[in-house]
Image (cartoon, rainbow, N blue to C red):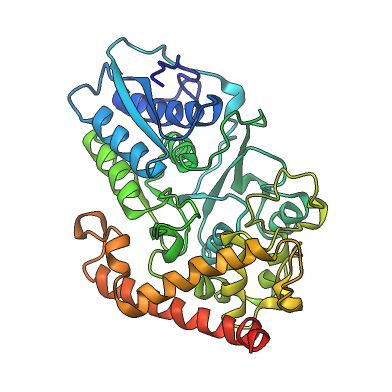
Length: 395
């Protein structure tokens, strides 16, 4: 399919003072890719043409690099062909989308309501940082009322900048979601003269290797994606930079960094993608499926430092024992197959050909050694999980 999609959003902040109209074009292009991705129903592996504005940035590689980034994030599911539109876009937008209210801070931090972003919030909180948290919701379960109450008791409510878009997705995907987070973060950071944007994602799922398993992998927070957007920001003379502070940590380490008070509220965070809008789950209790790779990874990571008592409820609960007669056991077994394969590749040292490790995309001189250590730690955490819940049951 080759479809040209009209602009859905032109600007996001009324009377926003930008040093460069090229920045406005960049974020508009990022937003257009995301909304097209979720709004247009289509089959997988289709080619899609989308116009993005390039009047001010036509010589700055925005079109080419954003196309490369979208294709990388979609990992073969969709082939993007971004076309240049050299007409000026209308100036500025809808003041209702942004109500910043004179807040200030030292960083913008993406907050999804998931466990990693929750741990990122704690990291800032424990260090006394004056951080701002940006949340973009597609459904009401991504940042639940109980979690809000707890966080608002620790931080003032004005620390959270929240936007909602509850229209039903026509194409069920999360692959380009980070683009909308980053785009809005860039606009908010520009409005508030903040230079630092943080995306909190553990190292393993940031790299998210595709092992030719039935599980579809995403590259939403891969270092290459962050590098590409940072490169474009630099090209348009913006000094805003995006980073992932958890890039070299396992999810188990990230979780265990919480103090006891914050650990007690882990149950309020949402990891499972399938439970957020599925009516068969009791979302008021944050019940999650327990069988998808994201849920199993969460269980592996909580068990790594004996933090299971703080976890949420699951439809299939491995903590109660390996139930091979459960209707959802085959799904759980499939996720285990992925992690078994991942661990085998780590131990065989063949995993690196699936990671797209490149010195150019890392901001660390010792990136390879740190990544190697992170992977070995995960392998140990997985062994511990299996010794608790899998091996004994299969003996």
